[in-house]
Image: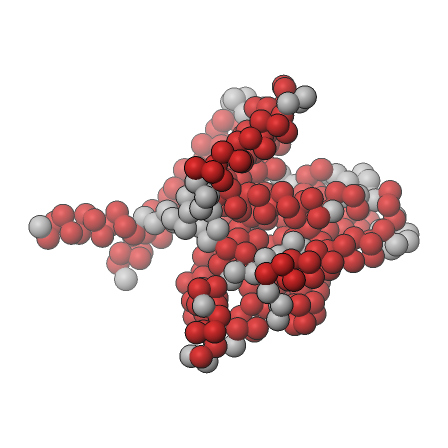
Length: 318
């Protein structure tokens, strides 16, 4: 109990120190508006990657529908936020989007999550496209293919930082819960999990709904960050981009997803001056990682501060 308390306090101190460092760098001008925007996009990508990693990396379900749930959150924030430009309305819209995404994930998850592998990927991709087509044909509510412009800039780096911390903690607590352990058992061996009484379909649906909610939150934050939402921004390419972050960092590693989002975000920033060859270098970097690190940058490794306490305790005993 004391060890867990020490670990939690240490994590809290690290998070506060990180927040304070960014605040100081922004206030003294080291991080200008451009770098702050890069940080915000990296934070949004972390939320997306952590949520998709729960579905793909921890529950073992190949989903390509993340962009659809992101679109639900984005349009909820755009529709409500543009009509009532207050933070209360924005957070209310974020909640509405999360609930709606969870409900849609539940409805489509019941029939589709009985599928496996490529079949599930095609099914979730179809669901994502249905959501996007529904938005295009949403009439005056969604403004069709033209999208919604002029959304107030609600999203700040502080807000993104807060939601990165909250979603990451929520995901870690989910994985450490009895349902989370059942999720891992389904990934390892679904037949064995069923043989010991695990309702595998139920477990997969819960993980799918959880991941959809995190995608919706990220979508709302991005709508408040960019200031516009357009259906073409939520094609399956967006789902692939998030999947690349997850695979690059390591399937089944929250730490890997975070590190990967940061590395790829910085790489994109550094390559902006060479736009003509940016995607070639970016793709080459991904290929090299997959060749030399097939399991991703970190594989399934997780950063755990409790290990340091265990090591120090062993050294004291010796």
